[in-house]
Every structure is written in structure tokens, then in C-alpha cells.
Amino acid sequence: MYKQDISGSVMHAKMLGDKKIITEEEKAEIIKGLSGILKDIENGTLPLSGDAEDIHMFIEEKLTERIGDSGKRLHTARSRNDQVALDVRMYMSDECEEIGGLILKLIFVIAEKAKQNTDVIMPGYTHLQRAQPITFAHHILTYAFMLKRDFERIADAKKRMISQCPIGSCALAGTTYDTDRYFEAEHLGFTGISLNSIDGVSDRDFALELLSAFSILMMHLSRFSEEIILWSSWEFKFIELDDSYTTGSSIMPQKKNPDMAELVRGKTGRVYGDLMGLLTTLKGLPLAYNKDMQEDKEALFDAVDTVKMCLEVFAPMTETMKTLPDNMYKAAGKGFINATDLADYLVKKGMPFRTAYKKVGEIVAYCIENGLVLDNVPIEKYKEYDSLFDNDLYDEISLETCVSKRISAGGTGKSSVSEQIKYITEFLNEKGVY
Image 1: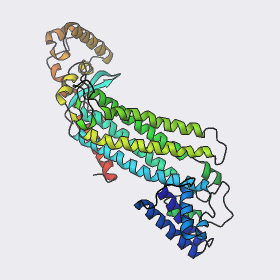
Image 2: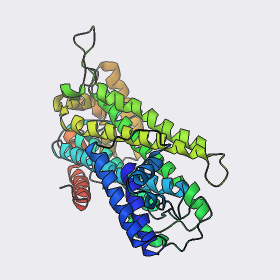
Image 3: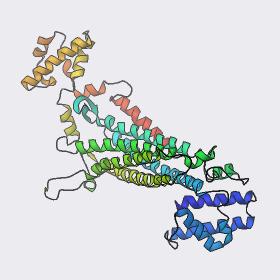
Image 4: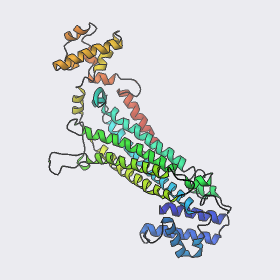
């Protein structure tokens, strides 16, 4: 967090100088010294090592070494308690921006994949049983909407996080100096200050909220991973992953294992653990600051690294994923997934739905017993079940018709899917992606 610590310290020095708590000369010396430290850290001439207790003390010690007693004045009217609370918020704010960008990139990839597959018919599932025909575009767009919510959740959490700048809360009770907390908050990118100094140093709700949002995001990536794993298996064979995102077996030459998707699925538990670990750490802490609270860094840093790593691999894995439309269509032709449409056919001819439901169930049982599907049952056999059946039923229960006639908003019909793609595209446009 050296960047955030130095940024916060520069602004603190400016405030101290403007309020005449330190002299203008001391302010200038401190800012120049901090700028030099930042430059040296980034160019590698000042390694982050040594005997300092933490990054805050490291920077203060290096500053004092370089500019003398003026460096010792920087810590006036602040404590490490409010300093670290500030740095963590600033660090997480920066990371939220980066993670948000990675989420948008994945949403973009999904939207493009959907555009390429609006006519690809596949079976939709409930209970992992073939249920009704849908398009691959409709299915994959589901994850775009999930990820959109993830993006918004993280953005909302960030808004709350930067609404309360803790600097100036000091150890817990504020300070005797006439400081300008609003000045520091505004120039550090915050929209307000913590109005209670004890809350300013002890609040880690923002960390929990972000870890919760990250956990939900990882849950979505894990669900997507699970489907990619299933789809790429020989039992489904709906997609084929690029070799860059699979590995072979050490003894079975025919294997092409979806390791990247499996690792994302596995890493989800790690982020959950970060959330539960911090919740457990905080649950019994009295006010205000306690050393236990330094455990927030490990959880946050680990979750950030894990989420970014998973998002960085997921977008190109999805982009290079090859769909196998013929296999999807063949699978959709099995499992009687047009049975609901056959019942609807009878309803449109005047039969109550529950009666139609029961009658179609009897026909499905007949098909199973005789190795048939609804599409190739002779019309004569249909008429034995009810005189309402006619030759037009075959068009009504074709997979193409089953998909196209689902015209309700949000459904799998082509116009609805087009609207979904348009909605996601407009969202991406608003965020500057297209």
C-alpha cells in the first residue's frame, strides 16, 4: 500500500501546512521527500525491506532519514489507526476499479459470444434434466446479467467505502489541533468524512462488504465454470475449449481436462474463506482499534489477487471457446423437451391445460415404451389420444418453432434475445467498453 500511504501523507502534509500546524518550508520538504521516496520505490532503488514494523513506519523512517526533523512532523494530528484505515480504503478503491474493468471485459466477451450463437438451439435444463429448448445465446447471456450485478455491487460498495474518510480520527478520539478533515477527504477522492472518530478507526464493514461482493462474483464464475466443465465432457460435447486452457493426463493420452475452469471453481472456496475469516476475526472486538484488525489485509489482498487472476483467465477462455451447434441440436431433440409445447398446442385448441398436461404425459410414456420421440409419432396414433390433434402439430413442436414462439420479454425467442443483447451492449457503452 506504499502508493496509497504516500498519497495520503502528501495530502496530510498539505493540510498541516495550510492550517499553519507546520510551516510552509516543512510542508514543502515533506512533500518533496515523499515524492522522492515514491520515485525510488517504483524504480527499484529503494527496496521495501528493513526492520520497520510496517509500510507506514518504513516510509516515515525513510523520510526522516532524508529530510531530518521535518519528517518527524508529518505524523502530527494523525495516528497509525486512522492512517491504516485510510490506506486500506484507498487501496481497495483502486482495486475495485481494476476488478470492475475485468468484469466489463468478460461481459463484453459473453455478449459477443451470444451474438454469434443466436440461432444455435440447445436443451435448457432444470434439475440437470432436459427441460425446454432454448438458444445458446439465451443461456450464456444469463452470466452477463449476473456479472452486471456483480459490477454494480462492487461499485455500490465502493461508493459507501469512499463516503467516509477516516483520516483525522487519530487513535480514536480525534485531535486537539485545528485540522481540516474535509480538505483531506476531498483531495483524496472521498465524498465525506467519518462523522464519529471511533467508527473511523474501527469500521471494517467496507472490507466485509467487498469480500461478500467478491464471494458472490466468484460463485457466479464457479457456476459458469461448472457448466463449461460439463459442456466440454464427452457426455455433453456442446463446446470445445482451446488447448491453452486445458491440460492432458499423465497416463491417458485421450484426455483434455478443463483445468482452468476447475481451478476457478476451486478458488471460489478460497475467497469464501477470506470472507468468513474476517467475519470471525471481527465478531468479538471491542471498540475502538485492536491489533486483530490487521488480519483484514491478508483476507483482502488474497481475495483481490484471486478474483483478478480468475477474471483474467476467464475472458480469453470464454472468447476462444468453440461451440458445437450440431451436438447441441441433437441433444435438444432428445428428452421430450417439446412436451410443454405439445400441451400448449392442445390448450390453444380449447383443452384445459391440466387435461392437456395429463394427456401429453400419457403420450410421452408411450414414446418411452416404444423408443419414439414426439416428432415421429404417427398422426393416427395421436388421434387415438384426442381428435384435436392434426398434422399441424409437427410444425408446432419442432425445435425451431418451440424457440421462436417464446415471445415473452426475457424469453428465448429471437426478438427477446436481441433485446437482451441490446441491453447488455448499452450497459457496456455507458461504461465506455464499446
